[in-house]
Amino acid sequence: DAGVIQSPRHEVTEMGQEVTLRCKPISGHDYLFWYRQTMMRGLELLIYFNNNVPIDDSGMPEDRFSAKMPNASFSTLKIQPSEPRDSAVYFCASTVGYTYNEQFFGPGTRLTVL
Amino acid sequence: AQTVTQSQPEMSVQEAETVTLSCTYDTSESDYYLFWYKQPPSRQMILVIRQEAYKQQNATENRFSVNFQKAAKSFSLKISDSQLGDAAMYFCAYSSYLTGTASKLTFGTGTRLQVTL
Image (cartoon, rainbow over all chains, first blue to last red; front, side, top):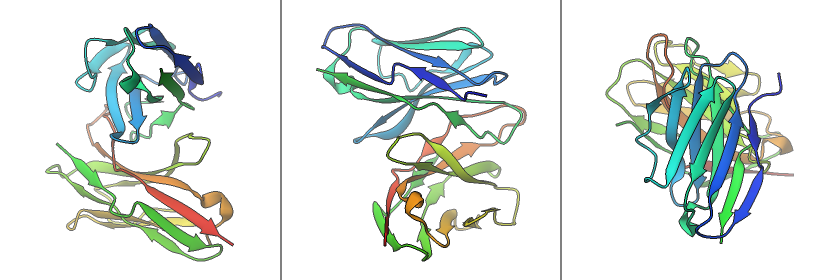
């Protein structure tokens, strides 16, 4: 298995632009998580899905952030409009619900908003 | 809400020596999972070891072992025979135990481990 795939690996954009991050979970995994990593706040959960349905989006910072999972093999995290404080590494992770909850992480997307 | 605390921002160990990374957590739940993840410079998060709270036996994975003290809410990671490749950021993480479902991970702030020759 190729593991969790994220694209792009790096994204540099200007303030006010729309940014879309993409994630392909491991085949057969029914949970997908989006985390954000910053120096100030560490690793924090933004949102997670079960069987493509959002379960907990309480970590989404504000309305500028939105996430979708249109099918079992694809999810997006969109920021519109982007701001410099959104600069961070965004991780996607997936797991299977009936296991001990080991989450498999993608390589992350480093977002820089100028 | 659960919290995870790693009080050692940085640690250093000589190659082939043993080092212990500390982690404490706060929870009112009786069943849960604890994890140690490793994040090397490549930034890929890699699971090192896990512990189920209902198991009294400490988990072991090759050179990595944990000291799980449930009453003290302590979960330390011991790395034996340290290797240069062990140099990384190590995160302690907590997740609730929910039968048949998954839950989010709550991470500590991390400990940066240096391995010297």
